[in-house]
Image 1 (cartoon, rainbow, N blue to C red):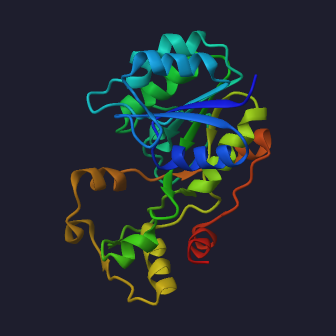
Image 2: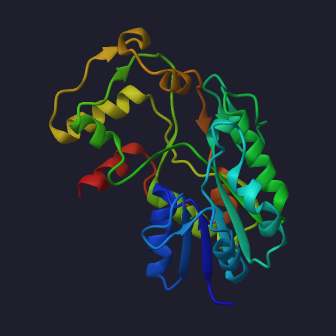
Image 3: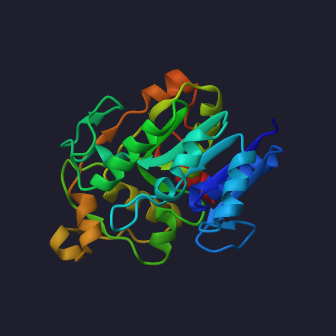
Length: 267
């Protein structure tokens, strides 16, 4: 069978993966809410099912809906479960681990205790769907056009002073590399994260210095006047371990820390 990837949800990461696979000779078909840019409309059931029948690989990057439902599993789960595939995957989130009070978490840590219960349920449901399922738990994602550098340039970055608070992150191209490495690796859950969890305020300061701009002042959460969604982000503190992906997939992040990743965005 030729290498044909069907991707549900042609968002930032999935589009980057599609570009890489097409450059390597793959046929890639994606879905969007509406048919555009060569993608199928998600609710064009006959066309999506036809693409699924001819696919060798299937990936979903679609998160749960606001009501907690899982659109891809609800509409196409049975067909995906029965399809004759060589590989299947789902882009999940390290948010499934909830708050770890700054401790390291690996794939053996329990999921479902945090604010993203719908995501945790989807993570488990995708794992249960097929024996060849690869679930990629992703932290904060950055890359071209979507990075601290862009936010600092646009004056949209605050530096929040929360002693002991750290976040993990990953460059989009390292996600792509992890997914591709898994084509020859065992199924299961994988944390795809860089090697250096770090405080948000250090990231913003480094971005400002790279750009030759003034470093924004440190602020408390109250002074920053963040949205409820952003406040939820700061309510969780964990360091994401990536050893399983390194051991079982032979994957290594090209950008092992935020400094390497942001420098590459400027080069």
